[in-house]
Length: 132
Image (cartoon, rainbow, N blue to C red; front, side, top):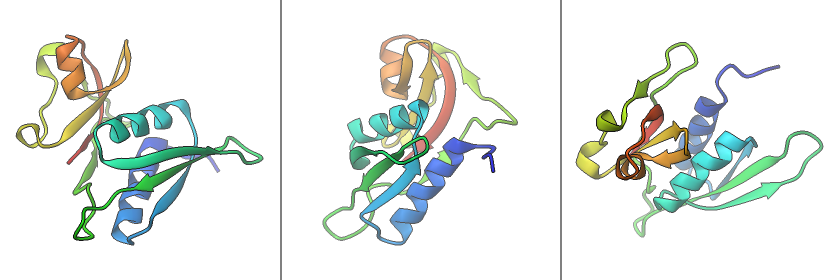
């Protein structure tokens, strides 16, 4: 069965894995999901990302991170642009999440990047999600 919103599925699997205190979650792989996870990893929200081969499209094995007291590093994940309603912003209107404590992830003509990097490179695009 085909999935209508694979990015929302990625975010939900990460959220559910954090709520159930899992070490790793497996997600069906795609280039966009890999790039979103790369941004989350560079911002310090998740640990390692490993690609696992299977008979289909492959899997991304995402290692989840927790603080010293056992609480997850990700407090919230929110899908902004949906298949039914896309959200595009210009380079001057890239959203700042929680006064800079969170990160927004954008798809731009220069690739998938954080909102901070998009502002510094003066590029806009589609706001995929917000993480804090």
